[in-house]
Length: 252
Ligand SMILES: [Zn+2]
Image (cartoon, rainbow, N blue to C red):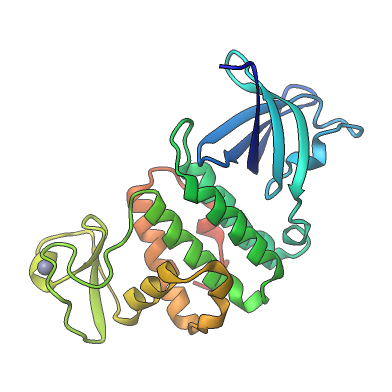
């Protein structure tokens, strides 16, 4: 294993280290999490400071260290500046990087995750503000699917029976999808959702990020879908996602 290696990565989070250094958490292009030290990154004349800001996609040269690797070079690929200039975009993009920070781990590859994440941020930069919530919901349901929790949305997650159409559908957190009344039984992780919510999530799972806005999903259904996903994610991912908790303020 070479002592120096190159990787393209998305910056997720920075943490202060000592007087002038940063520890930066990245999602690498293979889907693994990389934490590395950017020495002197908090000094005004630092070569790295602005290049390792969260939301930035960067070409890194890293030197292997004993515990954390060291950033030796950083070249911006995409700064995603527009995400920092506007509170709505910033909140939406923060949900993306916080989710990635909590689900990604060292040495666990998931190659589709990096492409999904950088594409989501690219689209969020240019999207209409009213489409941001749909993009957040689409990213979260796709991200959970890549993380091994693809919700079952078209037939019962317990017995595979087709779900009768009514006003409401039962969704089981533990079974990971819609369930019939028999399978819901005594499952205390089951919640009742509007019957349209599984269809919304299914449509978003199948859509390209660039096409999500054009689906024209009503805001009421996006809010219900987001509420369901929050519960689903907190059931399966043990770490609290502050940006997701706060997303949409007190409106939801
Ligand atoms: Zn069933």
